[in-house]
Image (cartoon, rainbow, N blue to C red; front, side, top):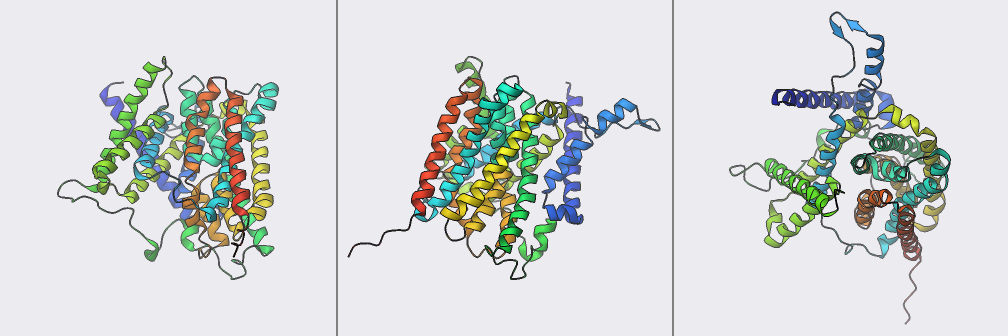
Length: 462
């Protein structure tokens, strides 16, 4: 590809993705149905891009040779490279995560143990359920690939970002179809989370588990439309350096770009060390990011890092990632595995319902309903879905569920990261039962935390 073609391709792709995101934002703000479903603007943009992209409307238009004057109607003019952008974007997300956050268990205490154990059980359990289904049923009956065992976790508990990461690992090893399947799983998971969460919220409140509806409180307009009122608007970050030296945003972008580039060379190095079996780019970018974070802490350089700015960059990359991933879904890949997907979705739905309706009320204690509604949201799509559902049952944040989750999520970081980066490599190496054993043991630890932390403290002897 010469320079002019590369420039035009990148320009058109970026412009079309921008237009789709703008259209998705407009539809969320104006269409009541999308407000009721609380569909994020990037998901709406991705759905529109998929329908009008090369594999649906574009394929139909090309088949029937529709023309408007001298123009052939063949869908959105997106290039074949759109799907490959997800590899870089997910690396950006993981690099931001490594740079911006301190990892550790020091802030996890007994009061949060049950909530943390519940989250660990939910996440690791999805890995176990999917892998056992693949080994026992999907592979023998439907000849499904081993990667199908991780699709449930990647699309539901992991979301679009983890789906991109999973697809990247398998695509680099000759299984390009897994990206489309994983993004389909993420889309179905988000719809399940939103629709199912609203139903659960209304049933639960009607049974007295939450008093939000009895108080006559509804979702704020900003939660429905996605547009914040003036008094709700907060800065996306703070300046950490003087503009006379360099803009804060430019510095943060430079750091992330540097981490991703070093991750790229780390990926090449891993290919040499492991006989052409390269680690995923997001994994090497995450490792480099942790090293950079360590150096910055040792040298006092963390003063120039603003967490809000890093979070905003990560969120922006995630939004574009969703659009690119959904636009690049290949229906034929999904159609080849529709039976396996239906079984996985059914098992995932039953598993989440059992945890939410049977386990949560017995072990999560006060505020169990709000905690399980929030967990339902993030375990079927994204934290944003969980927040939206939480606002239905606890609009004034009286129970502090979101604040507790910030600490309870700490032990989940290495578990979900490992499931996205290590488990696929184990599946490729033929170690499917080892994945079941490792994440099964993690799920057992989650159960232990859940049970022990939920027990009332014994009174001290006098």
